[in-house]
Length: 160
Image (cartoon, rainbow, N blue to C red):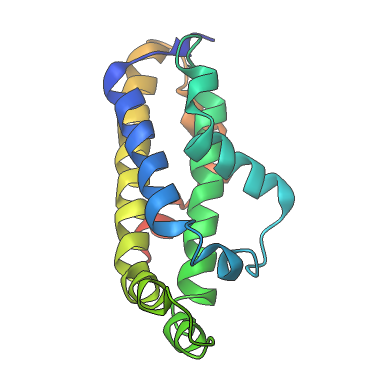
């Protein structure tokens, strides 16, 4: 299978990683994230997509691996939406006073909208990959149609 080296896709992956690190998995929110019921493999796949871009920059991405990473991120989005968003602000504001209490509360207040931006960027990446997949597959079946974990991915990301 050819490796994906498309600059638009690479740029989007970099944006996803930056957004995730700064707005989702930052030092204020990470303790709450780690309480989500997510297995180690899912966390590893999320990390590959959001933090290890340099590993793939020159050699390219395998399409099936990117799809798996997006599926894991989508499961994370759903878990965070259901397990964190409803109680995060009250948990964060009940923490003891500290110099960065305001920053913690800002991170909690903005988490839901930042999670939506993350999900939207993942959805955009997925749609771009599907188009590329269709183009690359020519007369064969596209990769995304052969992967069970991608069924319902749009619903997980959009939240319906």
